Image (cartoon, rainbow, N blue to C red; front, side, top):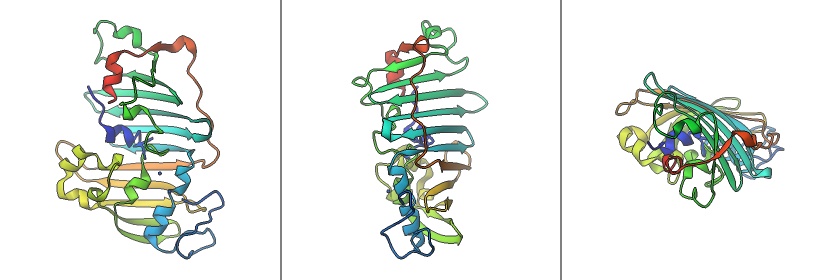
Length: 267
């Protein structure tokens, strides 16, 4: 069983989805277009949203993600090269709980798949345990390296490269559409998801909120029905810019070495 990159990334979502990386510094200043307020937020709506992700690149924040079949939260702390993310995903037929801790170069992951793996020889040893992953063996497992492609697991900056239409609806609030086919190398542009969405991928509705410093605080994407997936909203929040706390190693008595199936699962 493989975990699809876009679902963990929005992850993984986002930490995430995921991503989910370019915004204002802690003082809210910006060298972009002329400001519309004292916060330094660019007057142009597209420029404001692009600038709103610069703080994420600094890698010191908390995030959360909520969708129809997925909820999660996490912390990114680039100063200590650490991050943690917990997620629950699934439906009435299957649920998976997922806890990932990364303190470079080490990664620990705990996965609970309920009764799915019950009875499989050797799986009882992994129950309620963090599996430690060898960095050299996990190098191809993109879903297990939060820092691999930036500091935002959800990659909001990547998604904003596909901004199609944007309008400001109030102080710090915006709405518009994404053209995900214009986004490259992002969790938001997973090839399988784009194939399922078809032409709908060119016009994904969204709303966004910025904080008083012009930094992204909430992004809500309205994903249309596609294939076997029903229409749903994906809500991503960011908070605690500059004041996140480092991740901590799991207790030694809760750690075992990962098996080959775990490495394969997250490729």
